[in-house]
Length: 377
Image (cartoon, rainbow, N blue to C red):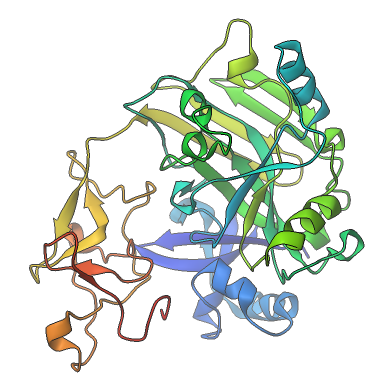
């Protein structure tokens, strides 16, 4: 049975589901033990595959058209990318006089860059050199340290599509490339997580990228200079890989900066990326909204991570709308009081932008964490 795990919201409520054709099973509705965050679900003990199959047989089904697909892993602990890893991309870099390292060249994308499969990409106010890169992303399952390249099956939960959106001039400010890779909304992923059981040969998948219907990238993961086992072994030699970590594995030839002449993304353009067996994601470029202001809740408090734009919408830090994934932390003056439900926002929505439940009474330098500690929800 095909296992395509997704994160979705319906009526502003965050869920994890199993995609079956044009429907989604709401796993938590029939098994309260299922987390509503896929990262936490991947970290849970037990035979996850069997639990999902058992739950999906009893779970209510929702039409895909009735829900909003979110980034499969909304709050990863790590988001890493591998540069210059496809033969065709390495060749186009060399043609422009660039140097391609012999070893794996990993960089960091800040986790606040994560956005959904159909969320907009912001064209930054500070640059016009906005570029696309269609990539296959590995999502870590069991993870661990010092994982040998031949023992990666349990370490990998599955695969999904990623657009490693880059701001090229900022990328070149430092060898780490982090500043050019980490703008908010510049990590669209999805549309779901396809388990490793479903990908017979992930090393031979076609990958294509279109901009406004024009085919820009047409590659295959067979071009990779390093296999997935080598990638996992390299990273886990240095640090522990954890459930839900995202590893974007690189892009084939055809990125905008190496076209002749270079062609960067502009407002109104749409980028679509498809990978064989994994589906597709599609994101429209919009101008970066005006600097957001903290939303005032009825209580008079303001959530540091719930921002409202000048258009009255709630784009949040990474372009998502409010949901109900957290509980409100009480101010210090109520430290011994019973925890309250989160206040309703405009339109009756419930806030979920505060991943760790950080709230402030108005002073941006003074905020309070959840009573049970960071990540307790």
